[in-house]
Length: 223
Image 1 (cartoon, helix red, strand yellow):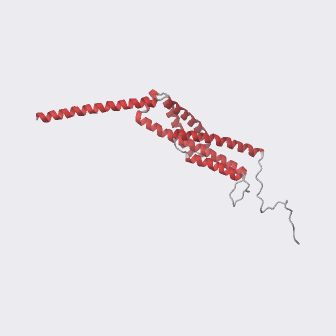
Image 2: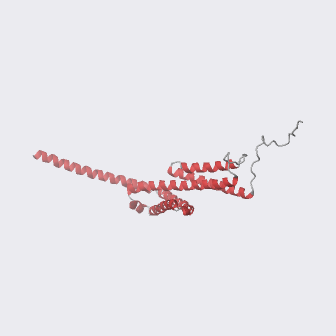
Image 3: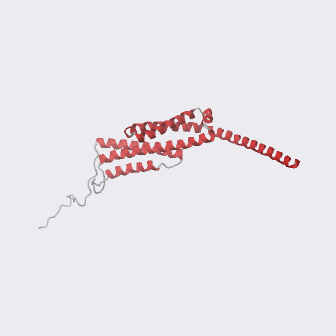
């Protein structure tokens, strides 16, 4: 006997599974993730403009977060074989990826500011800069606190979340201090004084060298 199947009947082997429908809680969480993703993306672009470097770890974390959500919200049913996560798990994981990206951005900025201030201190001296720009002392103080938080977040995992929340705020303050410092054009004046000092030193060395050369010449003539 031949069984004729109605064309309107679903064919399970050929029809893709229906996409996951979102309940109100899931929709709210995804909206929150999108807001966070946009915010961290903004922080990333600002960090890249400040340092002129790509913060690759943070870029990758944001990519992972997006990929996780796209996979979970696709038409593919989650199984152990295909590795597609269920939506609730994907939301939790994506949120962690975004948090990781935020941490990577803070780490990159702390490293950049430390390298920058080390260079400035070596060239001009911290005290000299502080005399011209008193807020520079606050920048150095905040930077020291930020380094301490980074170290503490590694040694005490239980406090890592709160430490990095403090670090993000502290990094924002350091960034504000740094831009105020750059906008004040303090470096321009320091560079001028630096070159004046070098020219003065060069003249002094030249004068001493000329004097000794004259003395040696006269000595040889008299001998």
